[in-house]
Amino acid sequence: MRAGRTGRGPIVALAAGALALGLLGCSSAGHHPGADPAGATGTAGGPGAPSPGQPRAGLTPAQLAAAYNLGPLRARGIDGAGQTIVIVDSFGSPTIGRDLAAFDTAFRLRAPAFLHVLQPAGPVPAYRPTTLRTGWASETTLDVEWAHAMAPAAGIVLVETPTAENEGKTGFPDIVTAEDYVIRHHLGQVVSQSFGATEQTFASAAQLRSFREPYVLAAQPQYAITMLAASGDSGASGETYDMKSLYPRRVIEWPASDPLVTAVGGTALSLTPAGTRQRPDTVWPDSGGGRSAVFARPAYQAGVTGITRGRRGIPDISMDGSCTSSAAIYASFAGSSSGHWQTICGTSMATPLFAGIVALADQAAGHALGNINPALYQMAAARDPGIVDVLSGANTVRSAASGVVVHGFRAAPGYDLASGVGTVNAADFVPELARLAGHAGGQAAGTATRGTR
Image 1 (cartoon, rainbow, N blue to C red):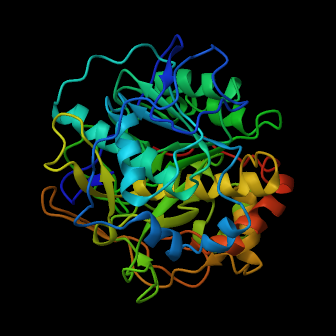
Image 2 (image 1 turned 135 degrees about the vertical axis):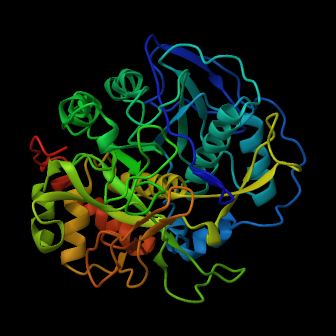
């Protein structure tokens, strides 16, 4: 996530002992079958929404719905009904219920089926408007509001955690605990993760692998949960262990690099006020992409061996993430921007956008799709019209602060390490993913080697 274009966005974490909060900001109450088995309670309606006015900048839900061709799906009633999107964020936001309600009021969106807030890792510390907490509150707001905008009838489970992930230093043991809880209790069909750490910041490949349990679990047929992760906002490089500088060579982030996770990269859009494209999408230069140092090429990437070589390549697919085509969010927590409207960008914007698309495909299929990566590459190989190739741009990174230039990868016809298989035309993409992923999604788990450090 990036607020404006200043600084790297938050990176997430979690911990143990389920603590359930209530339903927030729901005007259309309902308890989805996948909701918390611990019996969280709450009342529909929640805190009242402030009068939000209209944002002065940033893309709107109507623009992105038009850009990704959601209209034909919505005309058929495919709007996320009966599905649940799980969003994992450190700390959460103290005002998420009323902010989502204000966002919906401003853009004339329906309320979600429910907004269910859980703290499986234990209680979040009391909110104070520090840089860390306001950054995570903005990230939470982005994830919830824009996953909802893409699949407005879906329910949302927001998983808040009491610690922040800081590269390979802290946080991932808590993430494992919380996501394990989410998966074992069938809390949703798709999990959106807008966080990550450079593979090399872990003490070893073995340490990184020790945190894979939720993804292995999610891929099993009895769960079949789709796991998504942002590919990162440092182009072909990534932050070092101190989180102040970049590696002077090509590196990528985990969990996006995990073969059992769908890595979502970022594109730049150029849209009219109506959401019509003025030119084709291009790669956002800061979008993460490259080859894994830990994981070998999974079976579903066998058809792009010339590009990934023997390694897992990311991203798999891309959505809007550019700071030149940032999205509007409404956030009223202490320390938020004046007037409460912000613009925000990054691959952690692209990820909840795609989570909404996956929820639509789950609805169209009538069941959860699990690991969708095999289906994505099958669709790309067949040149399915649901996948729109991205043909221009690159993810070369030039950091004045770090004095680093890392030459990245260029977009090209077919799969590439800057945009993955491309982006989506949802009207075609959703039904085809629904058709294919139920057969292929959970079957090819992908392989891994010890890798190199």
